[in-house]
Length: 229
Image 1: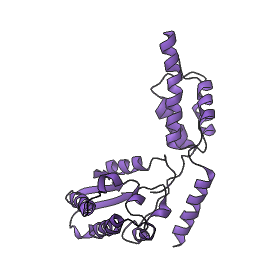
Image 2: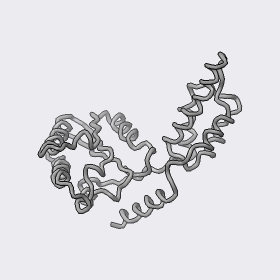
Image 3: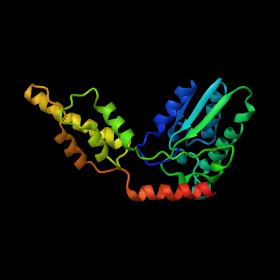
Image 4: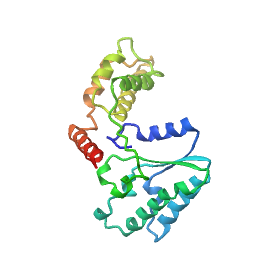
């Protein structure tokens, strides 16, 4: 899965594991990499062995570009050993009889991945996770505001339109930030205050979108190149 930051790639991986009742192994580069010679490779082998021991499992690697960067662009001797170890683990999936293992990864910079990981039999599917559409933004507002005091003037449909171009993480931040203002007012006045439309509009106006048009353009260009490769 690739796409702008804050679009819920990790959450989608967790949801996939829940849907298929699979053991979920979630790792980051910090969990695997080590300055000691041979330790990173052993960590990767242990990970794949543990996943293969389960009837059904998902290995999810977040920020996967840090583990399998394009080797020609990375001078690290650790990476020169780690990338082949991961590829070996992936290739060994079909050798574990009766075991189902799904390898998933997430990255905000797919152009930094080692091309070897993009070959058939490794990361066969490349799924773009875009910014939330109107329906998703509406649902995010509902989820983040449902347990908070919201003023009668707040129109979630209107706000969802207004939040076009914001990521899921941006929307959560806006809701959290908007909730702190009436909370502090309540503490000061001793009376419960609600999140008003004016408060939400002020917070939205002060919040910069974390995803720029240039970033979206680069994703579109990479997607096109990857599809034609």
